[in-house]
Amino acid sequence: MTDDLYPPYIQALLQPTAYPHPVVTVQLVQTHISFVLLAGDFVYKFKKPVDFGFLDFSSLKKRKKCCEQELLLNRRLSPEIYLQLVHVSDENGALMLDGAGDVIEYGVKMRRMPEEQMMVRVIERGELTPAHIKELVEVLVPFYEQAERSLEIDGFGTAEAVSVNVLENFEQTEGFIGNGALSQEQFDEISSYARSKLAEKDLFQSRIEQGRIRDCHGDLYSANICLADKVYIYDCIEFNQRFRYCDVASDVAFLAMDLDFHGLHELSSLFIDRFCDLSGDNDLRLLLNFYTCYRAYVRGKIGLFTAADPAVDTKIKEQNLAAAAQYFSLAHRYARRG
Image (cartoon, rainbow, N blue to C red; front, side):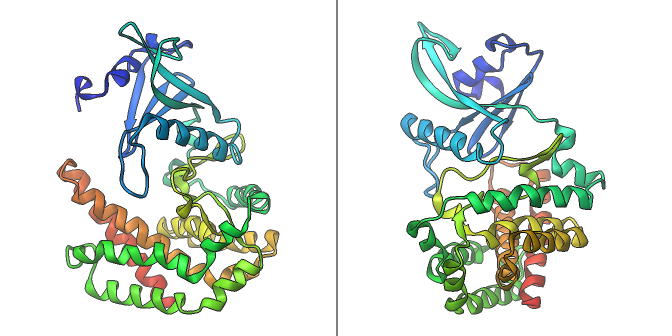
């Protein structure tokens, strides 16, 4: 996308002079829901005006509320990163960051973390250690202990509520069977395993009674962790409570699955062992395989959706299909083990 196809306020913020702090160059990173501007020592994140059903950023008011939620929720784990709400204003036709004119957009200002210490990069270099895993657990256990719990949140832990998230994945991917990433055998065995586990309603009820359904992170994997001077965990799901109100087992299963995906099976086992020991939550293991299977399938689904987007080029399509195939293969192994 060329600069003139970006929204006018993004075009304005691509200029280093738009910022009140030193900036040499501005780098723009896009996702399907956000514009992220890397500017000097800081990051500015703006939400795109999209409505996908499970998230709705279609109005300025809704985007402002989600920015406020993003700050509030992510400060639970990384208050040092999430600094403040910012806005872009129109001052007689000049678009200004935090100006005095009419507000045309809201965003979140964050402290920029060292890219070489992002957990994904550390894994790529083969430098992830047991010490990193232990430090992660020491951050996560108190986080979950202090995370909000209520009758409303407990309601998201029932087998019926969990099935909404799990079964929709099969509905959304059935049309992709046989495309090279997902086979009929994988689809049948994974969906059968998931349904058999969801039928064990007492198991899910037991987790509720133990107080294990919390306001969690929702997107806990290596892409959202930085291993710098300390552990920073960021970018939780702020736009839909359904993906954040869940069993602690579901949250930690995402990271355990991610470690398995990268072939770090011993570190994945260490992560769960250490977490169960420090939290006293040994019953987590009863649903761990179910949730790792669920998380792997979700990542496979996202790969399929990205590859199917007509806007992506051939290389990205092939990369996403290959990754999806790996995730579905991993989900299949979990299902068979289960």
